[in-house]
Length: 492
Image (tube, rainbow, N blue to C red; front, side, top):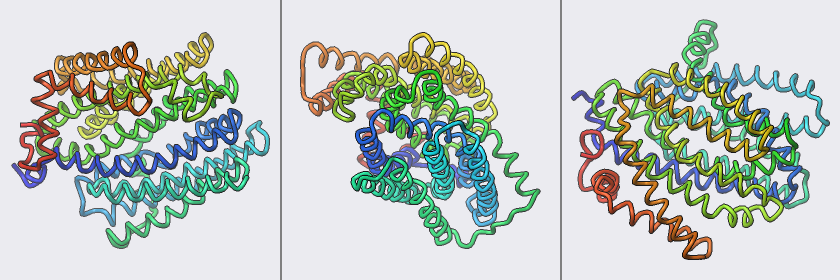
């Protein structure tokens, strides 16, 4: 086994550690961001949060063009060729800055043409600038992800989100308008662009930033499949909000987004799991296909075992959760949240499959699948929203994601063992059904006690199955004990 393969001994422990760093940081960061969202919802009501949500959805596409897939490209390539940071990443940063300037100019022109009130136009400009600056911040974080220095990325993320949220909440507390409160987003993000550049200089040395036509063209050509996928993925994730905003009302957008926002907060787990796995999977595809396949099998199993109980738990506590977080004004969001809860396990699978396709240099297959889903999803959203309103939007979002994991699973069929996945789905669904029946029909407990009991019941039922004890439980115990490295792709 070559040096890279030897370095991958104990891969399971490293993935857990890296995922742990990202998760802790994300929990702290998104906790503050989510609190800021709650403050906006309670202070400015359905109309205000609807305007905020619509502006976020509308300007989200700008972040795709500002990043242009460079973040994923840099993680993949820098994880394989770590000695090329100053030259390679310097070229990537130059292209990023060029794209950001062009997109900001486009934002100003587009906003001037929108048939919206002046205040709404300003809100779109402010949020659009924030989304563009955020791609630069994430670009610096991608270098540390590629090097598996996840703790640095995590601290960077926490710093940005906490300072942004606290600044915005102070403005709200002092009686500022929605526009003034949201202005904290681009200001604090721009400050973190400067901080990110400083961190890269200290970690890697001076970057060789140069803008040459040939270099720019090469970067854009390599990043194009990732950019196209990001654009299609963004459309798929924001299409519900956009269709609701245009077909129903701004207030309806707020009602939908308070439920969707909660799910988005939870989706950091599959997204960060993918980030933690991508550098290792990318190297294993080159050094050891056997370990690559074993890594895929194990992570897919874990995704199912974690995702399904999260969905069942959200469905169970949705009424009390909406009332606690948003108040009775958003009671319509309860049904929406119960539908969207099932996105969690689906997105778990989608993120894992996408990572392994990218690691195996098949990003074009990912993009083709996402394009088909974007087309079908647009039709589904229009038809179901026109017939069933907000519930139709939730169902259309779920159906589109189910179609996508089917297509991605087909692309990975030579690594994909349906029997193994089916066993995990049956086992996990059985455990979820047990805690739902017990807590719905037999006991009425406070919210915190309900969550704790659900976790205990689910875990207790899982360990009754030998497959779980031999794989997932053994993997967890190996990591916790640190008695020995996990060999042959993590579990054996």
